[in-house]
Image (cartoon, rainbow, N blue to C red):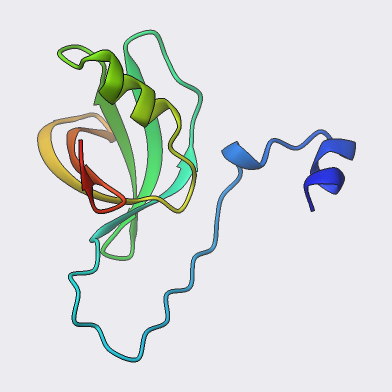
Length: 107
């Protein structure tokens, strides 16, 4: 699969993802947000398209106020990551959010 992606020059990191979650028991808290597409990083923010309660949302995660460890964790995020977020502000068609947990680990 990786080889085919390289041959057609497709960056799988930026492509949409289909995720199916199966479980016999749902005893654990399932995340309400899942990253569908990682958009190119800007000078001041990370931008992701995420699925929140069966709706596609555009999130901006501002870099200001984060330390290097958090920035490194966020720059390595791939499609399919589970998130818990806190809403800061709604700007036009984007939501500015703070990430509380990433793949069930606190940031």
